[in-house]
Length: 211
Image (tube, rainbow, N blue to C red; front, top):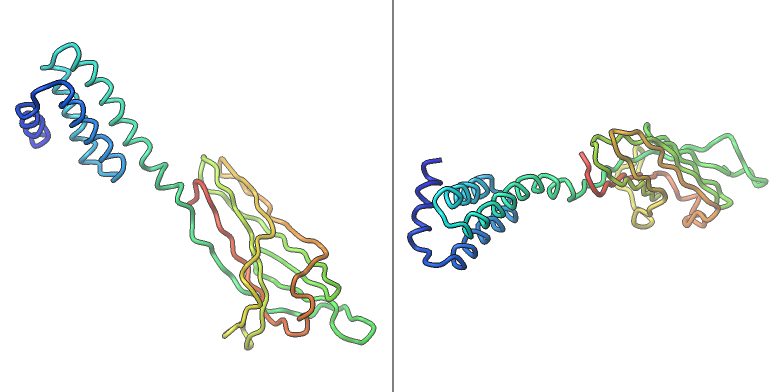
């Protein structure tokens, strides 16, 4: 606090006009908001308080405005950080043939068990995926489920994926809610390589307020 007051007094001696003071103070507030620096916000608040006590009526009005800006910078900084999103969480599953065969005696359906999510794909091009996701914030976030398949060694090691993960479902959640991510259609993009599939990967990404 003593350092903040000393800094405020030094700036007041150097600043010769109201306009110059305002520019100086606003610069400090904006810098604190952009850098999320608590010390910077405290400096701005100290300067504004000093001006409220010792300044003119015009400067007092400016001081109140700066106090409000400083409080806004402190309040919005955590929200801005939370808005950056969360790195997608990936999980792989081994392809297991279901008890279904086509007229040629080949497997007609593959199952994928990710634990929290289940998925399947058929030789005819149909597929489905479904699971639950837990949100951990009062503010809202949007969760997206993406899938891809590929061919690899047993245990899904050294997998050669047939493409990038493709978004298949999304849900917006708020207030610590649990949501269902489910998707499916009859246009499985890798149906032509059905016999090569040994692994699948699911990723869940989040944008907004995610924890």
